[in-house]
Image 1: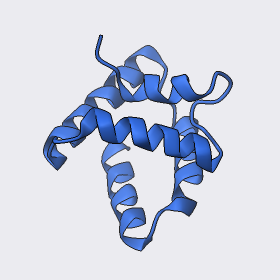
Image 2: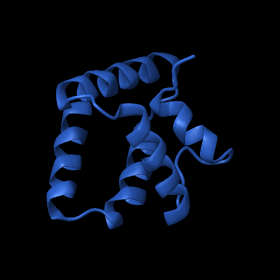
Image 3: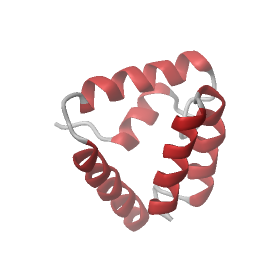
Image 4: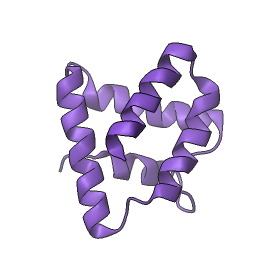
Length: 93
């Protein structure tokens, strides 16, 4: 069965949507890099938007979870990566 973005967060923690420590985040990023290796940016955006749409339909995607993810990831990003994250968030909203 194919893994998806929602399940990667759940594999690393039972109580939170996303890991809040550096080690947990590294585990998620490592799993994501393996899962999505070789895909171009358009493929990745299509996958992400599909997951967001499905999450909105089944109630697993919330604005609060998105903000929690941004707060968790942001400190680990450089300026260019933060800009890309902001662009992605704008597309999601």
